[in-house]
Length: 91
Image 1: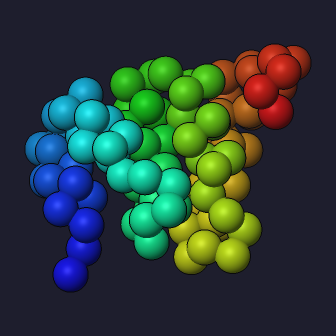
Image 2: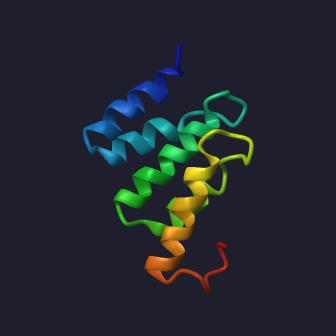
């Protein structure tokens, strides 16, 4: 069974209630097995709100061994190319 905050966050995300989803995903602790997934979806929420720095910061927390790592890395590349953030210190 998934973490309750992840489940609730996903429900908000599907309904495009990104601020509420961010609140739920942010409550998932680093020690949780669901932390990596929550960070990916935090990135998705921030991206949908055009908060690109926050999106990249969240995507960067997805471990390279996690199944969502490739998607997170791809999204970072898209942000870099399309939103001219290459020169910022977050990369």
